[in-house]
Image (tube, rainbow, N blue to C red; front, top):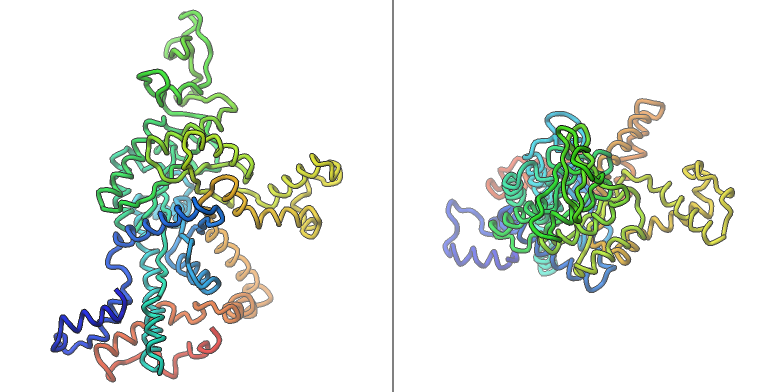
Length: 528
């Protein structure tokens, strides 16, 4: 309800005034600032937002969505504030919650790699924290508007701003890794994530107890039947909790995964088990005496063969079958697992490669849409400059010796025609991949990991070096002021004014407030 509707309802409920002399106007303000009753309500509302965005993308591929990976509520809050300052709206902006960053930065066991080595509940806790921070941003901004309402001569205009306020709460795409256990464990964890506010859950087809980062070696996938069961588990969690529009992202790591933990049992020709097993690396067995103790043989296409098995018991897939397995994974996830979006983990950012796979997927699943990881694991500068170099050689624009591939990272190419063209393609990459490869959502998994590292590196070098205080003021505070970053008023940003307002609501002129004339935040009142 709007503020005006809320106030009217309260006045009808308490025609003779609220108990204890509580001001109904103050109650209406608090109710308005509390933008969501529960985080489950957030999950329901944000799932609807995602569905609308997906429909808009289907109609116009330029309407793709974006997110940055955040490892704290404050990161997510500042991202949304920056977008709103720049664009005036948060339309098509999401938050990505990376399992990698939870493992690396939110892990009570220490800084650990992306191998599902963090506590299950740490993901749930981070979802809860992000939405707490975004809701507090709502409170802070709405409180400022209500303070303006107390002094303005144009109440209608301010009330219109309050009633039309756009919440900072936005959809989170939350990483559940490989499900942290069996299918029931996946279901239980998915429910907790949804109750914390997740409207979208991303799950990958790796083995839960052998999970690796998508950009490292040693990845082991599960049979498609197993993965479909986990997709069903997540869907059942959404349905049970009443999040009917809940979104599932099915991620396949098959492009870089050459191993499987088990060989599924085929019940009929062409079933998912058969389609998965056919890609195994095998050796023909013409005589049972070729088998040694402990060897296993299976029949494929009417022929007895021995799968290649490693000392750790894992089975190998044939080299060069990754793209075929990806296509089949995606079709099965959409058509049998009921997934809504796909995620194809790639080794390099190559629009043509992804588009080729997506076109094959769409032959069997025309509604296919992707989430794509614009990963910091890629050396973007080197990859794009290599692509430009290769294209120019193929087109006859340059000779191979004109650009030494080993030197392409050099700053000397920043202002060179090749470097400029590579940067142009970088700027257009997300638009191109949305149009040509069916990518509905573009994300960067670890920007706040790298961004925090760089800021602390630069500040520390200057502050502990020759610049001292100039390093902080020049690189941070002065930039905050000039770019109108609201966090420069750090007391206000964390809710100091909220406390003052509430004290006034309960105590009137007896309120002991922090925002008086001696508050040093006043130095920033006219500059941020």
